[in-house]
Length: 113
Length: 113
Image (spheres, chains in turn orange, yellow):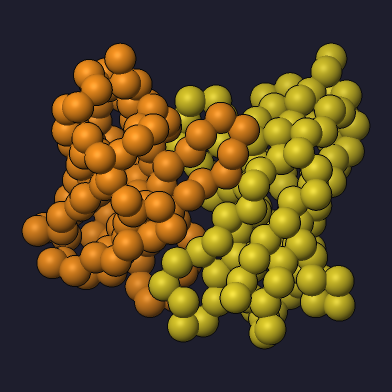
């Protein structure tokens, strides 16, 4: 079955370290997105990409970086510059120029220790 | 600019009772509207979507939503709630020419026996 795979499900990081979250999709979707979710809050957009080798900042891009070298993959790096990285991270994808509805991965919970 | 509000942060209903979750949006023309559900520690799942046409939209898991242009609303309904419906529900709005959707803050639903 097609879908989005996020790995790992749980991730622990020491302060000062960079860490990369994986997001892979086999839906042949053009667009991919990264969201951050904190307890009791909605989704905040970090970065998104409409096509390979192109991406745009979302609302809270500071302290994060992404790449889109392949259509299937959109990894997110949480850098040491991110002040409060502990959160639940969600990756999503969609097809076409019209937002037809996102397909989400199951998320990665990042904890800074 | 688009925006989405969900007036109810938390709702508790009895199993078997009817449910209505409110969603209001701000957008000048007819938007694309979505409802998603999120179980604890999971990603979001698309329940239903509205682009145009019939203003009453049927979705998965027995949910429906009605688009009311005059009230700028897209409320989610279910005639009889099951314990498994306990989750977080997000309303989202997109628009022609925009490459991403805006999510509301979410409504947490609890179901009591």
